[in-house]
Structures are given as structure tokens and as C-alpha cells.
Length: 71
Length: 308
Image 1 (cartoon, rainbow over the protein chains, first blue to last red):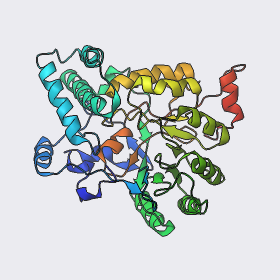
Image 2 (cartoon, rainbow over the protein chains, first blue to last red):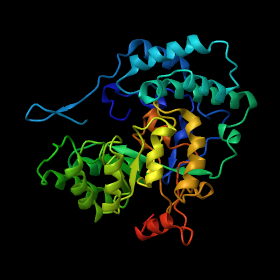
Image 3 (cartoon, helix red, strand yellow):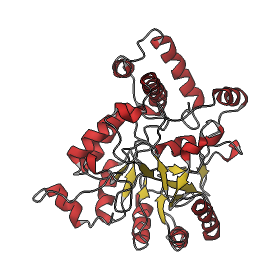
């Protein structure tokens, strides 16, 4: 997720072998043309990261009065 | 597969259950599997079950289309548009932060961004807190691009209606989750109070969760995020393609991908799998066609002066 700053450099392009499919030009992304989703998952990377990464921890807000707020 | 943010272990557990249940199931019978998972579960819906089910659903559509060697959209009636309009998420709490973040997105090719409206806000807080939000929107708009403002369900009604009003003059592309989805009656009221287009749906998980909002005509931009983890995948897409045309005078064939349309794309923080992929489905941009004369709902839309 975009707010998962703990992921560091990992982003969507880290998990696919055809990141060019997401290229943005003048505000648009071209319709994907490949078979299926048109996205080629790098399964080796997905499996490795899944094994070595801790689940993202939920965040939250607490007000000055100690009450919980919406995140 | 991406699992529900912050609840990955729960989704993995659900998936393990589905694996046991569906091994040996015919992979091409996607709808049958979906209905099995839904109707034979007794407890169903919600972010955990639906994240797991969406993952399986999307994978099966991908598999089937690959087997036939066509893009998935060929199985859904073919594509309407050649490209989709996208926006990117930006962070930053100060105007100077959002300005530099927005410039980065512009350099990446984006013409629109989305940002959070506020940090945490009390039920009834100082109205002064909202000024910063207005300043950030003005700053980004001054760069010549559009900006959606994500309330993120953080504000409660007393503050949300003030912020919607304050932003209105600066024409946000839309305001997202101005109130939490569990308050449909308040969202309906807010809809009547503001001309800001309202986006909602990130925390709605099935077609039945969306039903009330369609009936109320209280949301301008539905955000089912079918590729988001907690939604029932393409199954839901079909529903929206049909239902939105019936209920909203938003016509399926009029989905457009350029200015003049109600843009619905992703909060891509160029890089987020879930958000990014939300942009890529060909049916996401809903365009409000001129309403049919005499149609009460349509006239209401017109009176509200849809600017998009």
C-alpha cells in the first residue's frame, strides 16, 4: 500500500516482470494487451518477500484526551 | 496476491480454508466457485472473507483468459477505451510537502493526484484545523493539476460537513469517504449539502453493501476497487456495469477516459499494487450523461450542476 512506508523500495514494479505495462503518459495508462490480466507476476520475488517480511502493523490515532480516533 | 492491509494473517487463514475446500473444483467454473464460497458459507462478506475470495476470483479469470490467450477484457465484452485516466496518491501534511510530491507525480506523467484531507480530527474540533487542508488543495491546484481529497473516514459529521463546504470553492476532483460507509443516512445528507463529487466504496465489500448507496443516489464515484484485496473481484464488476446503468443514469457505454468524465481511478502511489491496479480496469470511469427529460433522479443530478 502507498502508506506502507516500511516496505522501503518495494512497490508494484518490484513484483512484476513487465512494469512497462504501468507506464503513465499524459495522465493515461494504455489498456493492457497481454493475455489474462496482462501483468506478469514475478512469483519468485513474491514467495521470497512473503517468507521474509513481517505483516504490516496497523496504525491508529489517539486524541489528547486519550480517546481513540479514526485512522 | 495482496491481502487485506493490516490483516494479512486473517486473510491467509481464510485462504487456507478455501484451498482445502476448492481443491478439485473445475477452474473454469468461476461463477460456480464464487457462489459456492458465498452461499455455502453462512457467515460471509466483510474485508477478510472477501479479500480471500477476490484473490481466488481474479486468479481464475486470469487463468481462463491465459488459457484462451486473450486479455480478460475480451471475456467481459471487449474493451471500450484504449487507455485509462489515472491519478497518483501523494503524502505530506504541509503545503510545501504536497507541492513537491505533486511535482514528482507530474514528472512521472500524472495529471491528477489524491491526498489525505487531514490527520486525526476530534468529533468536534477546532474549525481552524481545516484551514491547512484547504491550503494544500489550493497549492496543488495552482500547479495546474486536479486533486482528489481523501477524508479517509477520519472526520465525523460535524467536521466533515464544514470541510466539504470549505473545499468546495477550490473544486476538488472529488472527496473520498467523507464519512464512514456505515453511515449511509449521513452520507445521503452530506450529498445534498455539497457540490463536491463524493467517492465511496473502499470499505464496502459486496454488491449488497453497495445497494443502499445506489438506491440513495448518494455517491458520485463508486470505488469498488475490484482488484483491491477485500472485494469480490470481477464478480462485482459485472454487477456495477449493469446496476449503475439502471440506477444512476450513468450509462455503461459512456464510460470515458478523458476530461469531461467522472474520473475514477486509483490512488496509485506509483507503486502500490492494490491502488495501481485499480486504475487499469476499463470500466472505471463513469460519465454522467445528460439525464433523460422528466426523470426525477436525472433532473436532480442536473440541478446539482455536475461539473464533470
